[in-house]
Length: 232
Image (cartoon, rainbow, N blue to C red; front, side, top):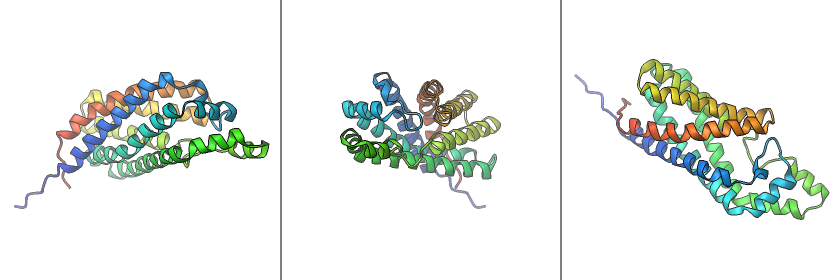
């Protein structure tokens, strides 16, 4: 009788990545009250306020926001892989497809944040120093490949929804964590809706919901993953 080997590397790596996600959410939640209001962007935002805020608060905005979202993007890829592996027996096609979209969104976010570290301040200075045509060109766009966060918030939110429902059906996660995952999914989609409908109040509500549920959920699933084994 052949014994199927048990693999602990995927869930253990996923546990570390999930813990890093939770800590990144915590860091953003702690720093968020200190962000200038002018840094909130829906659509292209108001360049005169946004770029002035970016120049005046480079450390807080660039290194805190971009630094933590780089951690979130890179760690999220491993966490998505591990959590998807736990529940993909429920609906393999849907779980794996949404997991791929979520990982793509997280990778885009990390790439955007690396670009932000390198170029955002230069871009802001060019806008402040530029003439009308330069300002119009810079102000019409944002420094991102995922302009309305369709992937980082939309696809990740959809994956969270699928995984949470699958975990409720299969019982691989405690029910409280599964319901919290659903709340986290709705927070992600609500924050995305703030971008999509150009509404700062909706963006704020989604940000708070996503931040609170993100800290608790990712730190709560990390120990569950660490204790799991999966069949290759």
